[in-house]
Image 1: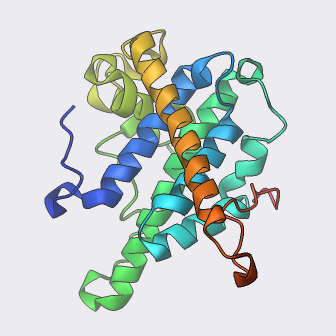
Image 2: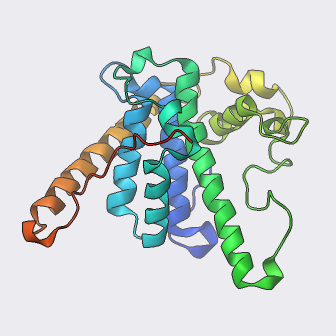
Image 3: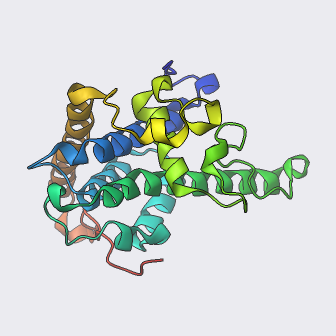
Length: 239
């Protein structure tokens, strides 16, 4: 697949590149089950992502909104990826799929919010269409939608896998060919190397965030009343 530079406006910039990276990592972790024994569980993966956003995402408003949604267990995060699981091998296949689906839901929420804010700032952008800004569209992935217009979760996972893992060879239903069966079959297009890279990327992200957090905490004067760099994991409501 063609990747943008991550900096140019035409490519979506840093934030767009960061979202692509998070989708790639979460989908890869789901496909490779967190890297196997000694790897990360879905809960540990989401917590590593939280720490990365907290420490390195430069958009203060974006960072604050993400952390707030994470810490209050929005999108059912705490129920879908419970903290109690400590062994990646004990997590079910559906349990792993919840990880990239959760990230997709968070991203769509952010995209929808951006559309609303821009519409409020510019009346010319106002629309009554509730799906403006949501991804994918019906044209991009017909099988991601049920007949009643709601999301089809199995079809959506197939599309995430096709987009960020298998590539065009899996041919999800929206593009003709094998449909969900092809996208969700036992294809190993990512291969063991791809799985190791995805798991290693998230592990490195977690380790780097931990190291950066310890450095920042050590440099924070005790009398300042500054908060600890590692906020709550999020044991609140399962919304």
